[in-house]
Image 1 (tube, rainbow, N blue to C red):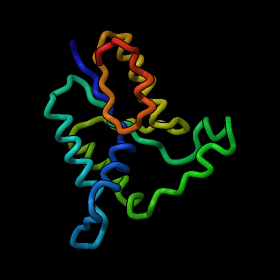
Image 2 (image 1 turned 45 degrees about the vertical axis):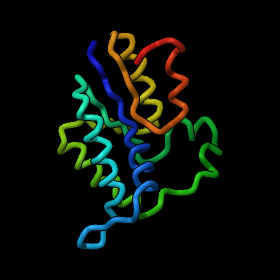
Image 3 (image 1 turned 90 degrees about the vertical axis):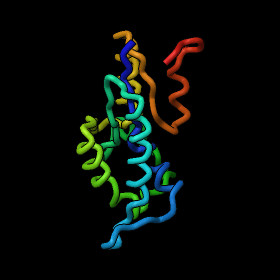
Image 4 (image 1 turned 90 degrees about the horizontal axis):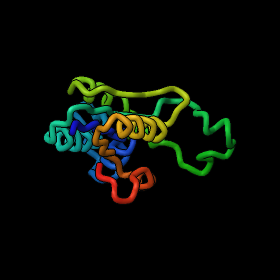
Length: 145
């Protein structure tokens, strides 16, 4: 059975940023999160899935902000040292030949959930590579991804 691996790029970036020491390049630009993301991608690609999508949050408001004005109101902003690594991360992912999905107005979690359900409907195995515990609810008890 073919597999569609959905990678939560935002989760990868945050996880790598907080797990690794603050690394930088010769120009002093932060690179620790990039190093971590590349290592996680290498591990995922070793499995040779038939399809891979790297999903990240698009900048700006989402439909959820329109539904609830306090949505993520208490969440701290992304640290500048992390923000500066978002676009280089996307360039690295593209250089590896992995499709990046960034849908304006829609969070990465919603895109991943939609693609997972569509993949399952097409009889694909759809593992979701993320640290987000909320995705555990997508998997029906007894089902195998």
